Amino acid sequence: MVSSLPIIVALDVPTQTEALDWVHRLPQVEAWKVGLELFCGEGPAIVQAIKDQGKRVFLDLKLHDIPNTVAGACRQLRSLEVDWLTLHGSGGPAMLQVASEVFAGTHTVLLAVTALTSLDEATVNALGIALPLADWVERLAVQAWQAGIRGLVCSPQEVARLRRLLGPTACLITPGVRLPGDALGDQQPGGHPPPGDRRRGLLCRGGAIVAAGPPTPTRPGNNSKPKFREFLSCPAGGSSSPDPSEW
Image 1 (cartoon, helix red, strand yellow):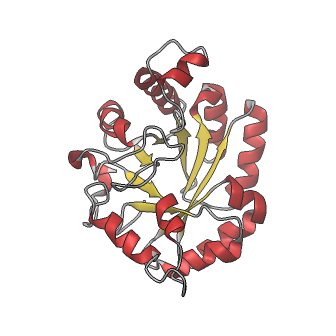
Image 2 (cartoon, one colour):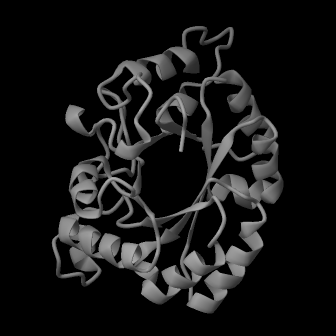
């Protein structure tokens, strides 16, 4: 959980040098997401490098395999002592339960990814899932909760429903949050949570901030800091310290 800002910024860059440059560029950010590209390129060392800066780490690997394989991966990852780690909720209750058992007694919050934010109703139906997307997300969320997973990654549109379903102790993280005018890219259900939901989850934000890039002689106005301040002032971001019970 983030003590002053309910925002995790995604390090959508391929190298440790670029990642740490962003960590230094935005010192007000307390939590950073390390995804597949950066972790595959730099390995566990990038996690330690970010932690050495006094920051929290959201390791977004979306583990998804048979239970025994995921248990082995979790045993390897446990020593990294990250703050959040993702698994696919669609991996099933047995997979989620063994991961929960491996991380029992640690401070790492396991997060079940419900539906990828690149999926829409048509894609879900093409996969053979007969449920409406929102109902499928709810089913995955309940199964994950029953398997001992205490956090979820969900779209901004799903936060309020899942908070009512799971109660105040569930950790909800919403990727795909965008400012007006930002391109959605492959984040189909992206957008702003309604103003009343802005303090019901942590916001994972990265693409447009990192894409803004550092100022250069040829693009002096293309600065990530104004973009970051703009995000903090928008209804989705908020600027006051969140009550942990509302995350």
